[in-house]
Length: 607
Image (cartoon, rainbow, N blue to C red):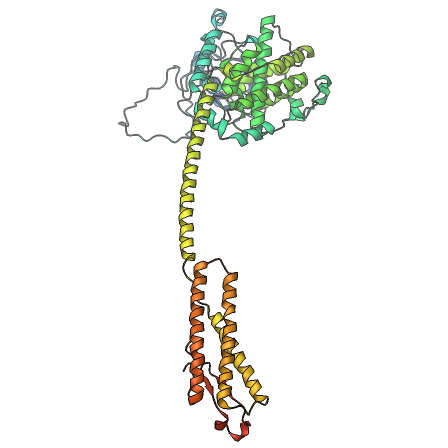
């Protein structure tokens, strides 16, 4: 059982009470180590040296004879009495070890018969020595003191705590673990009234209004999801009249843990029983909060959460009413955990009422879960010895009617925000005013933006109207239509000439041609007017096109007169607007192959 331990040189170890006895073949050591973990014992045996470690206890002995580790050694641990018994064989059978009753000499380091520590020159390094590594080997040569039992008179001066207020003097020898387990300083010397005063003062000091407001206004969705979670006790029969312990099933691990408990009875007076019941409610409240906020998956923070939310576990508090328990739990819920919402407090109260309504088996299952969480956490296991183990044994013997009566009391309990004395309503009113002012400011900004958008929109509309008022140019398609109409008229006259009107004289023919051309051009005059009357969206554009049409008719009339003159003098006619030259040839100029027909030639190019 050789063990190498590593710990800080500043760790304070407790020397346990021990006794030694012997027979011909074995040396027997009985070491008293209450409130320690049964699964963690370290033993070192080598010749005359014997070392024992079980946090926070350490024992080192220098024996008057040699012992050996050869497989015949035996060890046992009495949990109820906290006694560790070890039988170690002697190296030389039949040897008698002298001076086993000289405890002071046995505690001295090897080679010395003084319990004083060796002198160490701390100035040899001149202040320039480097710090040792964090994981250095533990220095076994530390000063030890002989254990002295606390007199009964002194114990009477200590204040009570633990299950049923049956314990006292426990933390007097566990100062190192004290700060990691509870918030109360020096519980053995602190009266219950002073504990409560210090607890309320600490809660008021640590309460953070900003954290509360963030959970209230910014984490609504996350809080809503936690409230929707359905824990295992909600899957039981919801009918209060149908409660039955048989509906609760225990795992094999839970059954094994129950077998390990010592069956015993507790002699409690009426006042102590009342405190035990209220402490149970306080502990279960902390447990159901952890289950809901972790959604049934306990984590490494679960042990801290449960003992921190429970005033019973963190301040060794004793309550006087159900309302006291609810107020304490509500205050601590708004001061310490991650989620600090009043709805989680009220939901936890309903959960505990449901658990108590389901019977004592349901309560026992919760206690076994807490016992496991603390058992796996160092140093929360001390709370198992002070409270949880006793609760697991005691709850199995209570009458069910007391459980149901307490469940009814929890159902009827009313907890309001002003009961917590944390000024929650004032904080929420101030927050509502701030939010309202912020909303008004945002509304004003939006109105200003809308006004700016509307003004910019009206400016853009004015620009569009000014652009529409600009005159439109005459479309080239309209000119092409006028040209095509005139050409069709000329082609008609040419066909009539081919049909046998060859005998007419050139002058008469030209006059008729001019009249026809003028009539064709006059017909085309109505086309642009008709189109302008249909498209009335832009009056100025219509006026422009109308003036252009008048100009066109004037030019056409002049062209007719010019054509008549050109025919007489056999000169070339050039229409100015259409830029389509028209040449008329008489019969005298035609060849004999053309049979005297009139040839009309329209040129589409320029002159």
